[in-house]
Structures are given as C-alpha cells and as structure tokens.
Length: 101
Image 1 (cartoon, one colour):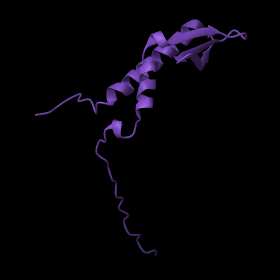
Image 2 (image 1 turned 180 degrees about the vertical axis):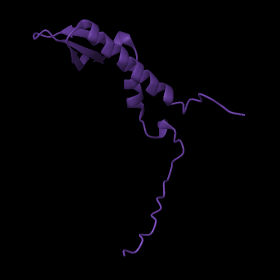
Image 3 (image 1 turned 120 degrees about the vertical axis):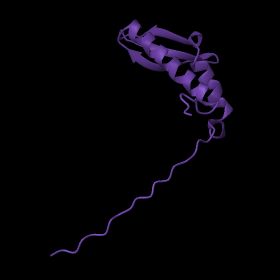
Image 4 (image 1 turned 90 degrees about the vertical axis):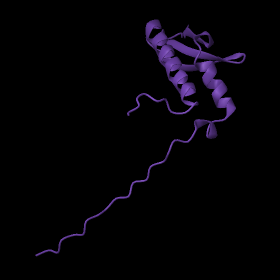
C-alpha cells in the first residue's frame, strides 16, 4: 500500500497597480499620440495589388500592415487608432467601471 502524498499548497502573489508612467518614456507616449490620430495614417497600393497602411514619423512614412482591400486596410488603421487611444487613456491609471456600496 502506498503512502499518501502530502498536499501541495501554492502561494500566489499579486501586485497592486503601478502607474504606467513609471515604465513608459515620453518618446513612447509621443509615438502613441501620433498613432492615435487618423490624420497621421495613409494607405498606399503596392505593385502586387495589396494595400499597405503607413503612419507618418516626421518626414518619413513607416509601413505597418498589408491587406488585400482598401476597406480591410482602413479597418486595420481604425483598430490601431482604437488600441493606441486606449493605451493613452490608461496612462492616467485604472478606469473605475463599477463601484459597490
């Protein structure tokens, strides 16, 4: 007859919210501001027929994604804008969505 194995206990450690400003430099925040405005984006058609999304970084354009249609490229830009807008919003700390009494 085998001896019963001892129970194993796991210790989980959680961290409290740390402001994102402590980890993110101003250059990163400035880039997110650029990426969160549609005026800084464009779509170009490539020789192979695909459409490339690009954002403006100073005087040059930086390629980001390639899509099969203009519509898909614009959706990709809109989703990117939404993503970076949320990142900027979270720099102010967590957003309270519900409180209890």
